[in-house]
Amino acid sequence: MQNLAKTDRDNSASLGVRQSPEMARVWDPIVRIFHWSLVLSFGVAWFTSHSSDDLHHWAGYFAAALVMMRLLWGFLGTPYARFSQFVRRPAIVGRYLLAITTGSEARYIGHNPAGGAMVLALMTAMTATALTGWMMTSDKYFGVPWVGRTHDLIAHSILLLVFVHVCGVVLASLRHRENLVKAMITGLKRVS
Amino acid sequence: MHRILAVTALAVLMTGPAFAAGTCSTAPAAKFQPQATLETKLKAEGLTVRQIKVEKGCYEVYAVDKAGKKVNVAYNAETLEKLANAESGEN
Image 1: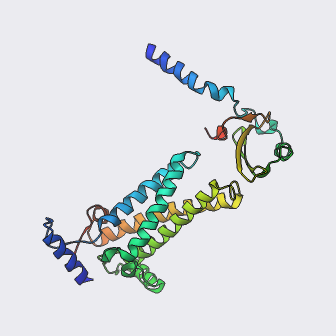
Image 2: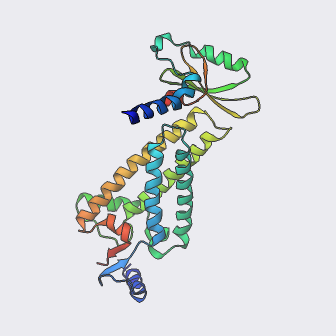
Image 3: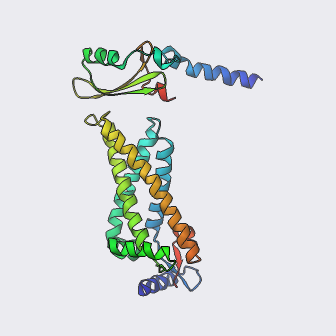
């Protein structure tokens, strides 16, 4: 972990990026563009959900494309973008969540175990929503009640997940005195 | 004032075709025709009805035709008049 951060920092320094010495480039541009584009497409899809607007369909296709891109990037991307770096066993996620209740959870430079689980949950839910949404437009599944109900249900569960995600971001930011929202914009995080 | 009149006139002109093509019923739900009546009528036309949603004073029909192509139409729930816009009840 420490080594990764150090390598990143050295790379940035050699590229002439001005930053305070203790900061490391953690989130690469693909990760950040993915994150905020997904926020935008979910927002657009949410607010156009009660119309048959093309905009709603395009937001869905765009979200699906973003998730596919992120899936690839999870295997080919920079160190902190890789699933192998942040996807952890459920037991470790559980232990981390338990540690939150006693205020003893560790700080992670990349995703913490709960954050990593949230990435997977959101990507899965986004895929399922986009898929069922597309099915609703096909001749085969058009108007089939369970498809529409599933689409609605998962879309609403995304809203719930987003709420939990934002709570987690706020909590971790307060606990470790850092601005994680800003980190997802600049890509920079404190090394220690 | 002239501008307001012009905008109003434009708005009326733009919504004109929608009115011409029929609107949803404004009557209470008790006055609506039963959904079964609409369904029977659609079956007679060769459609396979998958779902009928009540959208305010409209029935929005989700169906497929004989060729298996999707058909999305709205009907005035009181008169069962076919409307031009399938989303009439949502606007």
